[in-house]
Amino acid sequence: DFCGALNLDAIDLTGYYMKGYPLVPDDDYIFTLKNRIHKAGLSVSGTGIRNDFGSANLAERLIEVEFVKKWIEVAAKLGAPVIRIYSAKKLPEGYAWKEVADWIIASFKLCVAHGKKYGVIIGLQNHNDFILTAEQAIYFVDRLDKEWFGLVVDTGNFQIKEAYSEIALVAPYAVNWQIKELTTINGKVQPMDLKKLMKIIAASPYK
Image 1 (cartoon, rainbow, N blue to C red):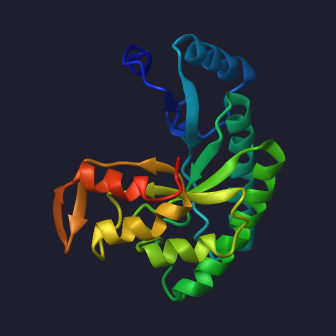
Image 2: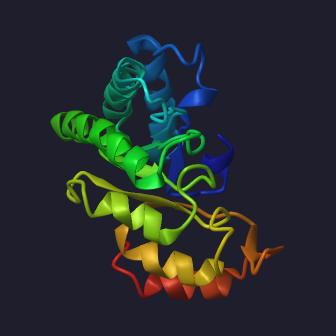
């Protein structure tokens, strides 16, 4: 209602604010929400959930994959073109980054295949967790189907290197954005320069 009153184009319907999360809502809830959004003059730009593919236990990762798959189907029913998911909460102790990244990518491949089936793009959000740099985010992009996988660029969560340079590196792979009012430059938290950011986005293929 707030976004409709502002005459915005679209809204991100984050899954973990929906009734009963992490359980999947029933169709009546989904379609009532979809109806209300349309009548408010909005479309759905995406949705998002909380997942964690960081377990060294394959069975636990596959449970997380099934969780994501169920919410991909919710995204499709809502008409959301993108579902935002995470990689892992942290690097598991005793493992190298690349080793963990490769098993996370194997989980992502299963999700991307399911997303393709339902017409939903899988968007990896850099959340200052397992993904800390643009280079790490691009490692994922290079190993997954770019037609159905991309990045949800979180402008506030490149905190190790110079943030605007990192954002510029990942902008070509963006399928959605989370623009924060603060960013981190050389370890110092600063207000996001929105004009500078918009120039980076405008220079990228993102539409």
